[in-house]
Length: 87
Image (cartoon, rainbow, N blue to C red; front, side):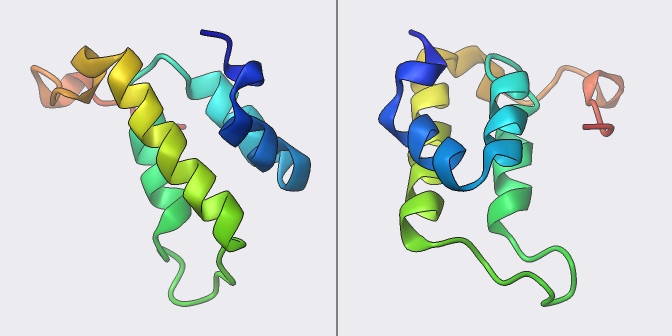
């Protein structure tokens, strides 16, 4: 599967190229799901405006697509030392 061919990736890339790059860099790693989760949650004390519905939907669908292609990456790490906190 080529990420750039995915409709949802293209939707994100068209409106938010930096976020699309973040998805691309994390694709196929354990870091993608936390990255998308952090994007979709207000972790800045209600200062985020949110995404257009189509982009939020595409981020969610890419998360599910990633889980389908890489189911082992959704398992919790074996140790707390395996977690990458620096995205």
